[in-house]
Image (cartoon, rainbow, N blue to C red):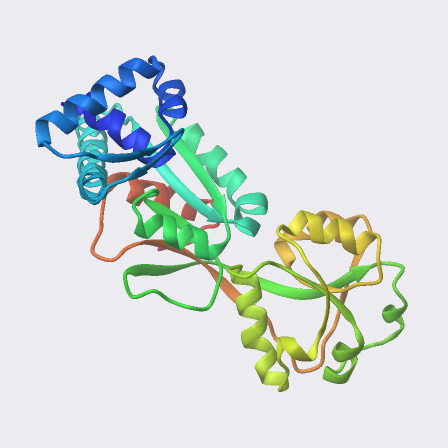
Amino acid sequence: MDFRLKVFYTVANRLSFTKAATELFITQPAISKHIQELEEQYKIKLFERNGSKISLTDAGEVLLKHSKNIFEIYREIDFDMSSLINERTGLLRVGASTTISQYIIPPLLARFHKKMENIKVNLLNGNTEQIESALLNKEIEIGIVEGQSKNKSIKYTQFLKDELVLVCKSSHSLLNKDECTPEDLKKMNFLIREQGSGTLEVIEHALKSLELKFSDLNIEMQLGSTESIKSYLLNSDCVAFMSIHAIEKELKNDELTILDVKNLSLERYFYIINLQGKNDSLSNLFIKIISSYYNLEL
C-alpha cells in the first residue's frame, strides 16, 4: 500500500506515467498496474486520461492531499527515530528565492552537509511567490525568502539583513553625480525582476517614500534572474536595484558601481518561512546550523 501511494504521489506530481517510471526506476506498465489497483481498491478513478495527457480527478486531489500528509509523517518518523541512536538521517526539502539560492544559501548548505552528511537536502529555486506557494502545497518543509507581504498561514522569522542598492556599470556617465534625486530616477532606464519577485515588491514599497511609482520609471526590460540583470547592465546604460550580496564580486572587480539615491533607504530582511503551527525536529536543526554560520540566535 505504501509503495502504491508513492507511485500515485509521483504520477500526481509529474502528471506523467513515463516520468514517474523514470523517477521510481520501474517500468511504465508497473506504474499503470499500481494505479489501477488503487482505483480498484477505492472504486473510483484517480486520473482522467485524454490521449497522452492525464489530470487528477476530484478523488485524485483528495488522495494527493492525504498522501502529502502521510509522507510528511514518515519523513519525521525517520529523522526522529534515527536521532535516538545518534545516526541522524532523512530528507529535508528547502526552498529559496532566487537571490538567496544564488548568493546566500550555497555555503549554508555546505556547512549543513558537513555536520549532517546523512541528511539529504533538496533545494527548490524560484521567486518569493513560488517558494511560498510550494510551502503551502507541502512541496517543501522550509524556505528562505525576501519580500514585504505576509501570508497568515506562514510563519516568518527574520534571518539575515540585506540592502538593495542602485547599480550601473563602472563606466556609466551617471557616476559624475554625487547623489541621484527622484527626478533623476525618472530619466534613467531600469531593469527589473519579474512579477512575484520579493526584490520587486521591496523596491515598489520603498519608492513610495519618494512619492514615486513603478509607472513613473522607464522600464527598459524585465528579466527573470539576477545574473541576467548583471550581464545586461555591463552591456548597457541601464540601472537596476540589486541586493548588495549579489554584486560583491562585480564591485570588487570594478565592473559595477553603486549610485547613491537621496532620501532612499532599501534595507530589508531575508526571512525563514515555515507553516504556522508546524514544528519538526529536522527543520529546527537546519535553522540552528545555518544561523550559527552568521552567529545569529533565532
